[in-house]
View 1 (cartoon, rainbow over the protein chains, first blue to last red):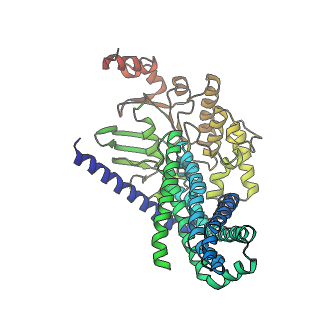
View 2: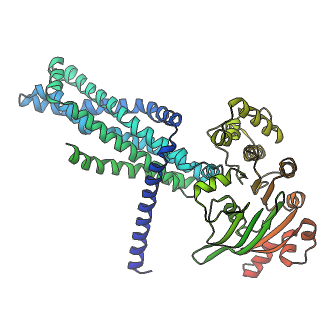
View 3: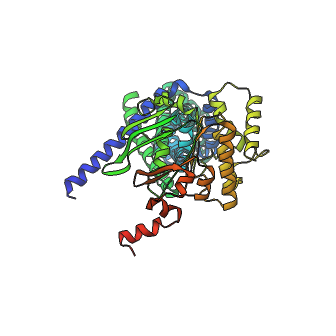
Length: 253
Length: 252
């Protein structure tokens, strides 16, 4: 096999994967009419509520360490009145959505791929089809909708926790007056800093669920394949969250 | 009635089913025998629509299922049931929910009616009272029986069995064979059974078909099959097929 054949195979394989992913997105949109609200609520509870502890810890410490780093510099230049505002804008626009996106890509994306991948290798997806149930409508649509709704809620929660972490460090460790921090939030941040961040989070939610479902559906035979798909799902989701974040930020702000 | 006309399944240059023709009458139990890789599981996947043929026609009750859409196929599938080789029970649901799944998806029955049907079907397979058990709490034979109860929940006219006795001890395997025969008598449905188990095949079959390298080499009644002079049939009955193939390939 010469170099052109190898290259050609890689290109065809890549295009085939993109085509399959596009088909999954199209079928998911088509099957939205079959949406089962009860399944969505179940998924929201399962994927969302269980993620609260890890998001709390991640965003609390991320907010804390960021404040730790910037407060000294801002105090040095006499800009201590901007600490809270800076934290709120950074958290609302970027850190909140992206950190929650990355955490959920690891937690929720992996869970979706492992569950659907295991169902694939144990013929449960075939069993659904045999029982005249569309696997996309039954498995993928509720997870995508649940993630699109739940990730923004979790991101908002994460932003509040992150700002709270910053508040604790700024006031308890760096000696900033609580009113300085809180007034600064009110002065420098706007509602759109938070709402547009939530729009981005909703897109991240859809991406995480779709990548998770796609990788699960594409799982080959065997337990090792489930592990491979899960790893691939997390890596792909995290990369897509970062890339999409750049383009969405360029577009929205 | 099920009819297969010149059905071919091929991947690139590898032919799995090579222009096969077959007719299965209503209420008949057809057992499909064949070595590993002979195409028998592919045949089942074609009948249930998990796979489409490369060419040829498959007609189920007058409908050409090779050309219909997935949505149209789903209507045909509601009259079919399948027992998978590894049971394929939904592991996040208990036994009762597994059996009730099709009823909840495709009927407007009340929960009381569904409960009654689930209890009845579990009773038919000898698993009364197991509704709340999870699949991982069951033995292989029990899982197969739950899979059968799930397959018959919607009163299908066609039941497909993929290796129903594989991985089971001879006694459990015999129980499964009795259940297959029992379901055919109780529901009057058509059954297609893919198996390696000769004892089970002779017990449940009205007719037996032997697939070899993607072609039927023999289709006859169980009695005729036993006395067939075809060398492949005799090899299969006497368990010599594997050894002869290996010798032919020069591996030993």
